[in-house]
Length: 456
Image (cartoon, rainbow, N blue to C red):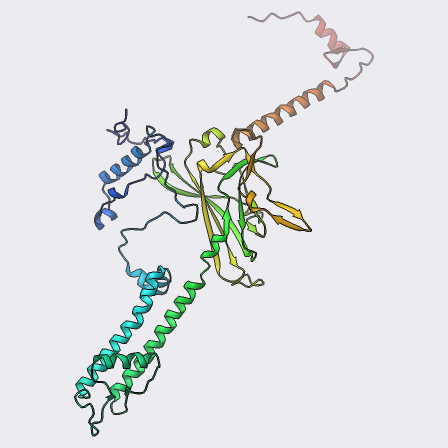
């Protein structure tokens, strides 16, 4: 049956009973680009119940169990190179971007940034050139060119082109000397002062934006690498999720920190569907193991304990799960930072692992050796793993089995201690009964007491 699922939407939902969805449906549906139509602001901000039902129904139909796992498209939240696959749309209040114009300009792509850079100067040159031309035309300086008795406000301006050249020469302080503002008019002096101030402001802003954009350590993340796969194996008798990070540069990251997020959809007990819920994975925050001295490749370990979201996940259930682990490594670039103050430009590198990129029962091969009195790192072995003996049960099941073994061992030890306990020797006039010493009169009473018959 490949038609519409019978449980989406239910014909008559029972009041007080939450609707349950299969685990494979708890993910964000992959909606094709062709189906993304232009919606109005009212429909985007106030969706109708019918719209919510259709969206949820489409979500469940996209991830229905009839679709084969190989044919189902997997949409990543963050790519392997760290780019977030989230597109923001239907932003109504776009004037907020203009309130933070500096960040808006710096975040532009280089082609748009250079376009804005050039247009800021060209527009100011054209505007002030037009004002110079208008002033010369109003005062009659254009019609009295070559008149020695005429006191011109702006000399040698006979048209808009010459006024534009005067604007460029004044703002860029070129000063060829053929065109200039004289002291015969106050408005010309005020106009020249205004253009000088505006030009200085544009220089400060554009040079600052260019410096910040060029010096941003965005490309530094290209030399911070992560292993392509995660591995799950036992370390110190604990089931652990591990991956490897490395730095290709000889200049190291200062105050490097690493953290991990689990992105997984789920349904609450009340029936609410949370498409992308974020939960933290402990990488040693309590013990300080998340702060790295990233000189050589290091294996980052997440211990799967009762506080871990993978506590009840086994090797078999891993194949049925659908989640994504986001790894975030950030630190200060050593070339731009202060070693003592740990201050400088911060660099951040990201990657992600999906459930099919986790290898159960594997471990990373060592990639560092000691040669000629120095440690040698072989990055050709950075991705290599080898298989180790690892139980396929979940960490919860292993913990319960260990507790059961300890309980049985303690019970058996108590039983043997009781059996090996020496019995007390009977004294004069005392009899022994089942390893217990009782007085003689009591023993005679026990022997003389008739046997009682109990009903079957």
